[in-house]
Image (tube, rainbow, N blue to C red; front, side):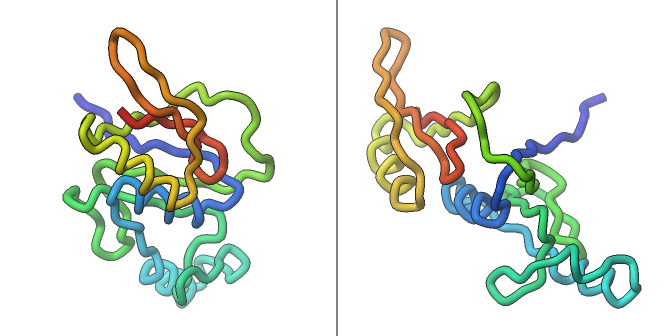
Length: 149
């Protein structure tokens, strides 16, 4: 039996991270405002758990992106397939990632992709050229490393 999973990334600003990665991956930024509204009306949550993002209610400590072609729950807008969840933590990133994303736009599109990601707030750390291939090592706005192949 296969196991459903999502990637969870710690963040000091989950909404900024989700916006960056939604744009970087061309994923859909999840909108949980309908779910939140229903939970507030039912008294199941309190306003201190919330914030406002782009004029809508959102979770203070969580934000997520999902693949636009994968199924999702229409009420909560939660992705049921490929999904990345960003959760607020109090401390900033320290040290090197033990896990990272590799983006594969293709060798002919790598330079344009790196430029687009830099415009979104990523920074280039270094270019790697080895007998097995070449790629660009980058950091997202909170310093998490990822590679563009």
